[in-house]
Length: 427
Ligand code: HEM
Image 1 (spheres, protein in one colour):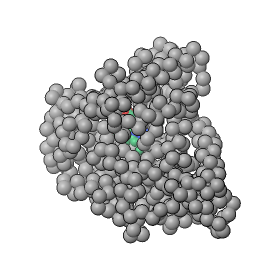
Image 2 (cartoon, protein in one colour):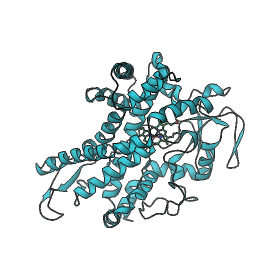
Image 3 (tube, protein in one colour):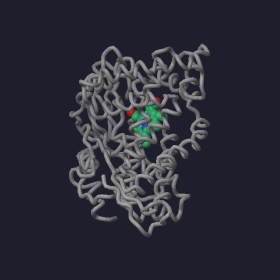
Image 4 (cartoon, rainbow, N blue to C red):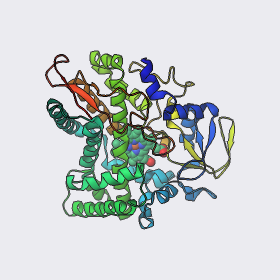
């Protein structure tokens, strides 16, 4: 591996390295610096896997005497209005049958077939964004891959899937930004705007159904099944917000990782059939969700030989697990030829009852978006040589965020085949 690259992505000050140090402190470490209050972080792969499957760890704090506020506490810290607190009662704070019922209903609308049918649409959206990049490059203007591809693609995909009209997307985008880069002063207005849109959308599709997820969810509801108006709103809120930023960050980091590892890119160019497996490696190493949402210990638990007392808030370290040398050989190397073994070989989408509902969609977007980018622009490269995570725009939105804010890149004009004139794209 290129040493400069290694320093950039895993060196001092890099969030992955900081998390790695926590893992080596012990299987369970205090994790107090969070908006949800004091918690413990489970750091190692096998323990993380086990706690995510353990029914004695609940997602709903109301079910555990003495538990903290969890996501409700995070919302309060972010300035989310109390009047909309019901929007915090999504899938990630429900357990058992309460959770299974809601998940079943949404899964009935959000089917594998629907994701599969979306594939040509994702390809078309990607091509459109790449056309804009080509045009900008040809005109000699800047191309920031985050702004030009990695953000707009997942936003367009999830909004099309769900049925959020074009003119409403900015409102969602604003709230999504505030959830990761908080500004409590702006939060109430942003949350109310999304809330109003959710209800308008539901009313519009109820009156005039379309071929989208809102209409399908409304139909589930109207068929006399048990989705009430609040649940419908919560599901839309969950789906759109969960589908936005997560995929955008993995795309951004993956683009960075691929552009700084030409030998890996070469493998994918020579053997494109590796892409689906490479996507597992991308999610393992570019994880956008550093840890699970909070769980609450209903009883005293033993985690890796450490007692976690009943009532504790527990978060599972997905990034620490994905880089755990006890589980992965050379964990900090990005290697598209790595055999993931059984399943995906990582915990980037979680595990168990709350396993990411959008995993298939996210994988499809990652494969189509990244593959099209590097195929269309074979000579694409970063416009800036950057030495540290800070320079690369890694933002520390909370204690452990790992994300890329901007990715200025050059590409040769389309059709130049990697030789000839370099089109410089200044940021
Ligand atoms: C690469 C992108 C993504 C990553 C890394 C990711 C990661 C995760 C993780 C780790 C969880 C489990 C959290 C926990 O157990 O506490 C989760 C849950 C969830 N994700 Fe994703 N996600 C991604 C994309 C998406 C997309 C595109 C959607 C929507 C279409 C989505 C919807 C959800 C939902 C609704 C849940 C809650 C499931 C439940 O509680 O039953 N995610 N995601």
